[in-house]
Image 1 (tube, rainbow, N blue to C red):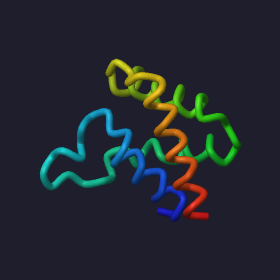
Image 2 (image 1 turned 90 degrees about the vertical axis):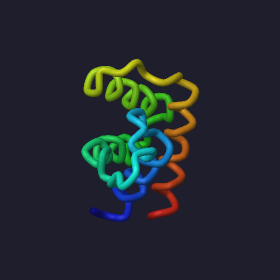
Image 3 (image 1 turned 180 degrees about the vertical axis):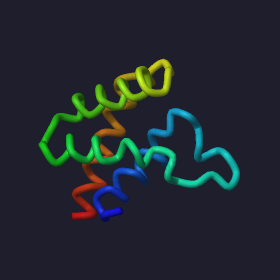
Length: 89
């Protein structure tokens, strides 16, 4: 996995984590790896934090069958993802 994908995956696992995987003892941090490329693509295309947050909400709703977390929290996580990508470049 590239450094940029690793940065996105780390934020998805540590901060987004709608399934609470990081709370499970011996959990592997690759649970959300499948979503990292799509999120990274949005960041690299200079999509807004709101657009990235909406993407995360669709994943929660459509793919995980969960009620999406509040938009403000997803926007904050999107900003963290963007900062992590910048730091990894």
